[in-house]
Image (cartoon, rainbow, N blue to C red; front, side):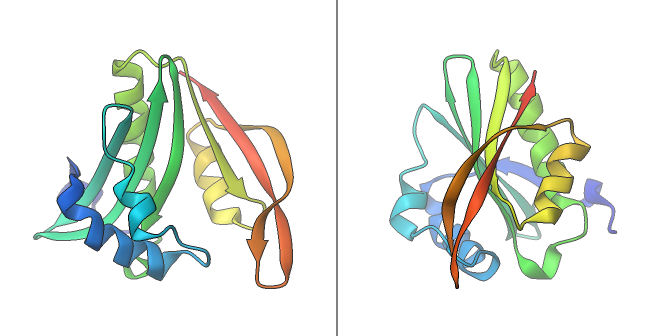
Length: 151
């Protein structure tokens, strides 16, 4: 694991969509499109990224409506996974959500994504429900695990 203090967490802008899309395509089996990512900028969204020497290594998107924050996407470039960057992103988002007076953060995760579930459990998320057959897979569908964390 690298020293995560060497990485800078910044707020991203619409100008970062191309770099975000590249990471999204590398890291996810069913990635969001560039247009969907571009729609995640505006007053209801917080979009942060981790930069190192001008290179975007990962990002996360939260939507907050009144006092409920929802983690919509978190993505770290495959070459940088396993180095604590996802943990850095999620902790930063939780802190910002608290500052913005959110009382809960919610998310959904593929049932098969055990590393992501482990990350979320590490920072205090717990399973709150399921969406049966929600996500497409290469050979069918799998459940979405709903998780939340009181803030």
